[in-house]
View 1 (cartoon, one colour):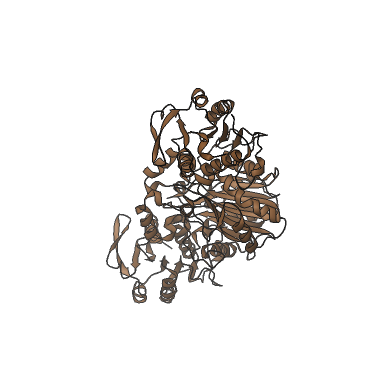
View 2 (cartoon, rainbow over the protein chains, first blue to last red; view 1 turned 135 degrees about the horizontal axis):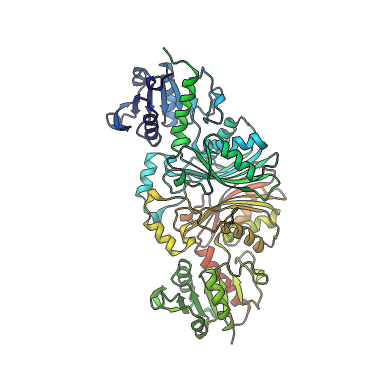
Amino acid sequence: MEQNGVRIGVIGATGAVGTVTLALLAQRGFRHVRAYASSRSAGTAVPFGNDTLLVEEASPEALAAGELDVCFFSVGTATSRELVPHAVEAGALAVDKSDAYRLTPGIPLVVAGVNDDAVSPGDRIVANPNCSAMQLACVLKPLHEAAGLVRVRVATYQSASGAGAQAMERLLREPQAEHDLRMDWDFDGVEFDEEAKLRAETRKILELPELPVSATCVRVPVLVGHAEAVWVETEEPLPPERARQLLGAAPGVRVEDFPSPRLAAGRDEVLVGRIRRDPTVESGLALFLACDNLRKGAALNAVQIAELLLARRPLAA
Amino acid sequence: MEQNGVRIGVIGATGAVGTVTLALLAQRGFRHVRAYASSRSAGTAVPFGNDTLLVEEASPEALAAGELDVCFFSVGTATSRELVPHAVEAGALAVDKSDAYRLTPGIPLVVAGVNDDAVSPGDRIVANPNCSAMQLACVLKPLHEAAGLVRVRVATYQSASGAGAQAMERLLREPQAEHDLRMDWDFDGVEFDEEAKLRAETRKILELPELPVSATCVRVPVLVGHAEAVWVETEEPLPPERARQLLGAAPGVRVEDFPSPRLAAGRDEVLVGRIRRDPTVESGLALFLACDNLRKGAALNAVQIAELLLARRPLAA
């Protein structure tokens, strides 16, 4: 199908992920794009390539009236739960970035290039994973195929943009002397929901429902780009040189000596480096990842999912 | 011995650690304190309590002329190698923060409260550990005594002040949008010297020369306070509640729900929290630490070491 003909809605168009989604759609030559946001932002304009789009209110009626083929949702979980069904009922494919549908049985949770086969032609909703799970899955997949994952430990260094545009503005206003590590997620008394998501989503994406994963999630005062220090144990020994080759050949992954958020920002690949033996165990590796959480971690993966879907199923008449 | 009578030299008095050392000495009632720094800073003044001290040039002759009982060195490794022997020859006890002597056999590497017994009355040089190893040892010691350490993995979140006063000034000038994670240590092709130090010093402090340790060290755009995400495996099972009790009773350690650099800054204790099972193994814990790298991680521990030494040996006549 000719991309230019696809009618697209970006819901949450004024947010951190929505803004990048619009930029990627413009770059890729999509032309029929409408922008939606909450009533507060309705009536404002957002950039779209060299042009601007009028922001419409994201209501069930507006989405139905938009006659959309694909809707990208980058809104809160409650708003996704409310609006996604309306978009689907009106005939659109919904690619949802919230955690409303990520763990719902029967709804695919997709990292393009990692588990494309999870998408079927009949799917009307596809969930876009948490940005931390996304980059981890990109790197774990080839390692698992080569040597079998036994257990995974990950400490994250997540940027302000993962918490949205307001968190970015807060960081830009905060005096440097007040910067701190933060843990701005819901806590159940043992772990943050972010840590539980990272485990559950990694398991679903890799189709390893019992994979042991221990995560410590931390927000760092960096604007864009999430990093992760990862320890992986494998069934078969996997020398670092072999892991480096495998990762260098993996889709959407790029080997760098010293990945960092600024190096990853604005780039499409997950950067992986510091690939070395974990000397504390027989078959283990230590790695360091960085990824633009707004691109592959969010908007880019959403667009890639839509491209997968568009390639596999005819649009509604 | 009456503290007020002890004659002290602070070498590197204008640096990040030297400044805090002077503040701690003033608070603790030490009165005979002289400040030394490179020829560039000689002649300037540094704060000492409500007073100021004239900065003298740190030359072998000046240190000998100072008739010092205790010298605190917070200078580069090369400068320590040059000056420490002169101070010792002139009769002073040297407490050295550089890595010149940390791994030298026969020279104690001391975390006060953790391995005080490593100090003997005849010691003339005592090494002050790397700030990352220091806070880790404070937390590992009680866990090892209770359950036996099998292996340790640690991802660090180290602040700018660990790289000195100039790095702090750089961070204060850097636009927030340019903040990044950095790895500003020497690299041997596999790991940073900071990671090798963390392993080697932890082993020496805990007297566990074979302890398997895998570290990933990262600098974060935070001014003061180092944090660490730690995974520990033990020989005996150690339930999180028991670990929490042990750590709550450990000297210089304080249990907090969510340790962070800003919470640790200006405080004497190592903060530890997020104490939970590592569900990927039979007997494992995950923890998160934060510590003021300039206090317990450096200046405070140096002063505590000197207090240990002064309590145990008569000063030179």
